[in-house]
Length: 370
Ligand SMILES: [Mg+2]
Image: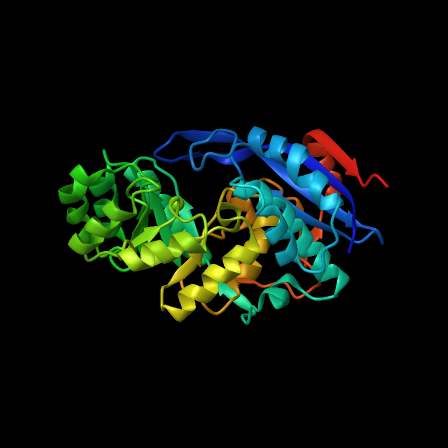
């Protein structure tokens, strides 16, 4: 397939409920949506999940736009690709900028699947018809968090992740545990601890948590290994994992027992597949993470989570967790506590392009020069 046209939509939406992490509060969310069309007019959509500020990884909306416009898009027009993994390999001539790569590669997966009349889940090798999902509760007063969890339990969510910071971790999580003694509960500290906090972290062992996500900094594999030896609760690495190689390092060092896979963070679905296959071989439980994304990335994550190795419910909440209205039809919803894996070709949902154009602050359009 020759890529004929690429459009980038810079959109901005208000979150229904402000989202608070150990880094700060989010009320608005900018996103870059990508549309790639081939010479026959077949098109696919992808999403760059970078945030506006570099708090989660070093990429931002602005760095992604720069790299896409000045490097990635021009080179895609010059080359012929038969499979999305070829797009990923080609973009890997450039260092870093994984989320920008994943946005393009994701759109190409959708296009590729439509071209071959198969669903994304099928193309990736997924074998589940529906998936259980988890939800993230952001930092708030304990009583409000408990109320949120009880509402989410009633809808059917099966795994609960609480964002904490080291000032309030035990207080918040122990009061949640008292109200819900047996729910699958985990915490995400987004790198807010250091080695000095090991005694404090060890106290959390008594709360029977499913896992603790990313207590230390992203390159602190050795420190995570020290902590994992001291704790019974499994450590899960998120920000540390940019590639299969990082998973191999974590495994060799015994730095964690669980891995979260975010296609954006690792450069796309092709790399996510390699991580999935490696983790299945090594018996490392994995799950699909979330990025406060639109339905495009969300439904892509549903397809990925339909693979056999994803044994822990992912952060794939309903569209209405963050948005009044999503950019896909139908939106992601829970039916009897599960999300159905779309069977239609490509993403298997309709992308509401009219809505995307309305939400766009800026639209950039590039066409092949012959
Ligand atoms: Mg995380």
